[in-house]
Image (tube, rainbow, N blue to C red; front, side, top):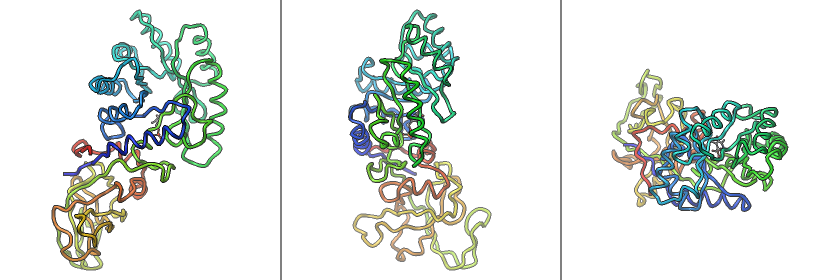
Length: 370
Ligand SMILES: *Cc1c(COP(=O)(O)O)cnc(C)c1O
């Protein structure tokens, strides 16, 4: 079976590294999409242990799961904030109140739903507000922000955070600086309310971008996202060789006979496929892979081999002709990404990004914490 090994110490170390980038801000963690596919509960508890107190999820249901995990780990609900980035509806307001989740209000509708929900419940709880600064994705526009500011200043809308999101923090463009200026102007309408702007890459843009709270995600999980060198790999995906054979020149390989061999080829059939989250688009891309062999086998350690033929649902074929004969055996495990092969490199070969690879890991891939 495919296994996703997760290095808990590396995850915690990455959080500390990101925290050290912005020593004047609190450092939170984006744990949406089940902790970027690694498991929101173990990720949140590991990060809480490292000192993280602010967590970001996409949906209220994800927030409930994180709250339960933190409570089981003995976290004080009053000392941990879980922000729900999207999807507030009347039906989920009680869920937020019951589990101490902070909704991020991003539309005038969100503001109305939250205020109505609070008055129905006879409750008072602070929300977060998201303003739009140039991404055109989710957030109040300038006029809406001014209206919300009037509510906040009059005390009708208690807020614990004003935030916005950077569109291109991992690229060298002027957009981040423009967003920063807009954010400074809009957040100034909310005197005294803590502010948050940066994702992982944003924390590397300088102290101007730290504000009161950062929200790193991919960097925690070892995705490079422009943070080259500073962070450790956290996840390693491996699968075992099921069978080895030599096919002759002229024969076809895999579904649709998509690959025709121009030489005799040693093929390893590995038990991992697109159902496990290995993108079919990577078929025959010659993704650089690094078979992991017993440490004693210095000859093979670190050798990379290409994928051949089409990746199928449960299996992938590797051309291992370049490896010494009989050095590879059924049962040997192959690393698809991890310390040996950067996840960003594999993602690029598959025409995608590390975020999508991680969050797309199949359910049946065993998550093994080390
Ligand atoms: C996902 C997300 C983050 C984390 O971004 P990374 O690039 O993974 O660091 C931060 N803020 C918001 C609003 C997000 O949606």
